[in-house]
Image (tube, rainbow, N blue to C red; front, top):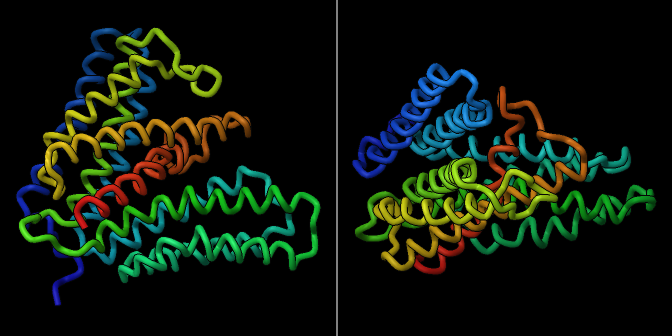
Length: 317
């Protein structure tokens, strides 16, 4: 049996290249913003610096989750789901009588990730959308408090779908079977997904700052522009093409999948932004110093993970 801390990334040059690329880009961005700040002290780089710091944090977590024994990877991603679920449910104003149903929802997190761990696809894919969809309302009904029960049913299931079901697809990537000739495996797919999702966020923000003039959805996210959206999608799709070696996909498929990661990442971002605007908060939490909560940084992944997983699963597996 291999040591649990054996660094598997060094067995695969492709993964090592991507890890070096990620940290190289982060280092370059950090140095660039530092130099610009010295040259132009009045330049407003606060948001860019905050995003870069949060990306250091998130990249470190996911890279660690891919280079260490995969058993730890499942636990790390499940923990992110746990924190994101806790952040969101604490903002949504649940009733006192919902506590036992919320406890059941917490219990579903390790179950969902265990299903991913053992590669039980049939049950993994229906556990939260079907089983928990039926069980949670029953738990709420048994409490006997019907005032506001419809709202609690909807909010609790949606929170589970977003923070647990969606994110758990990242864990299942690690359980996908080996494909002959594809050496990067699930760890490569996970790095591909996370890197493209995060670089899409940065590219859309950067292009928006450089060229943005036309608001795309001002009532939800006033800073997002058509220029940032289109520039981000084109940049992310191009970067995905050069990282195709991390996937078992051919060129047309990897371009389409990269495009869908960029598009669904944008959707995930604005959906959570709309929730925060409705609640009246800027961030979902304070877990990441300087840039809010965990959900603020992985809202896009909650959408890109299931989209990417099912496209790759359908095309290659």
